Amino acid sequence: MTLAHGRQVLMIPGPTTVPDAVLQAMHRPAIDIRQGELVDMTDRCLADLKTLFGTAGETFIYAANGHGAWEAALSNTLSRGDRVLVLESGRFARGWGEMGARLGLDVELLPGDWRRAVDPAALQARLAADDAHEIKAVLVVQIDTASGALNDIPALRRALDAAGHPALFMVDTIASLACVPFEMDGWGVDLSVSATQKGLMTPPGLSFVAAGPRAMAAHASAGLVTHYWDWTFRMGAAHYQKYCGTPPEHLIFALRAALDLLLAEGLAAAQRRHRLLAEAVRAAVAVWAQAGALAFNIERPEERADSVTVVLMPDHDPERLRRFCLETCGVTIGETIAEIHGHGFRIGHMGHVNAPTVLGALASVEMGLSVLGIPHGAGGVQAATEHLATALASERRTQAVPAAAAG
Image 1: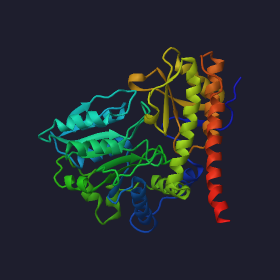
Image 2: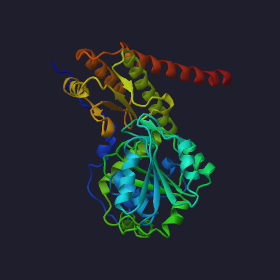
Image 3: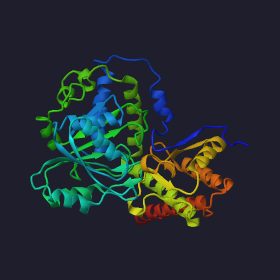
Image 4: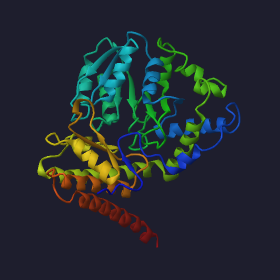
């Protein structure tokens, strides 16, 4: 028997569900790339990206996935032989470093624990030992979707400052932008990268770099600059220069529609929605884990991301559960990757998600655990629902107090 007939639900950590309004925005003819509406649309997208990143710096749009933004960041600020320090908390900062090695950078890994966020004290100690300031940049992700770790970016900035080290601080926000708070300028981040296919609710294919004053100063002497990624060329007066050629029109139409949806909701409200839904997922997983067969990959609650939850079940085949969710319920949950491949599953809860999608996905997982005989604590979905109900009731009471006082 299948319950999957109906609209499929995608609950992986990217690409995420694209809203109907964003899909519809792409269903239109191509337009002039040199003047008029598209020029205005580009200017507004670049300005709104500054709002999302929390920066007064320069923003750039690339027709590329997030790996393209990685390369753009490195090639515009560094030279062959420069040393960069990569902060490991899963797979993706390490991947950024591997790209740097292919570019001719001297890449050093600060080893981390796949079940922990980056340790600021370890970063401070390594930078304090670099008396000659050979390390030119520090690379880290805010959220690693492979491990589910949330790194404390302000604490890492404080570690750089405590060590008195001048390295550029570069942060990947691909899985965090618009999902959790990020204040590039306020937190002392020199450069940030992101992409469309996660919290920004747009099909894969566009990525972004935000560069602050120190990154722009480094660009002046960077030896790895190539024409396509070059910030100087992309800041030229002609509209086509912003894309180094023909703009990816229909992806820009989609991005504009997605930004309109996000800004209409309000950035703080979107982040609050992500936090509440993530807490609901964690409430369910905590109950399921009581039987001992399932566990959070990230051990400390404060280090768990609000955009993805990674669950370990090493003594049971997670593919059976994933197939059940897909084939019986029409819900796609993610597999674990890299070092923990085959040891669990991932629930993505970012972008165009709401209570019905998250609670429905949790109910499908819980049903699968029962049907497949995987030991788990009962009542995970109820715990998730009760958590949301309690949080919403508290908000209603808080809102009612000022209203009563005003009356």
